[in-house]
Length: 113
Image (tube, rainbow, N blue to C red):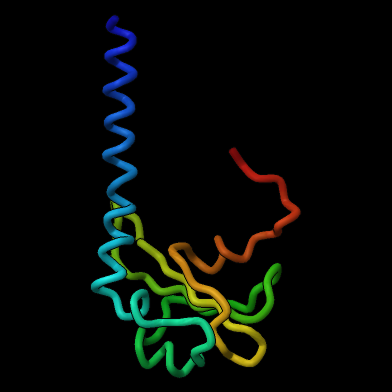
């Protein structure tokens, strides 16, 4: 019985901790202009007018184009990052809650578990 109670408690703690990141991401949709206002097809100048200068800019290796990483806050003492990727013509292709280096990964590489 104690083992079962321990498993329930561990599951509850994990659910609460995973909710922190989800909360910060959901909050960003309301409070961070680069998250709530950037749309596919916008130009790099439009994005930078909305979000300001990014924390880093890279030319992607595994994906096409370039990518800007914005630091939009902190979660559990770590930076909460948001990327915006651009195609060869400088228009937004994709965006999301990770850094450009996390986004620009080799799709053929084995996944770490």
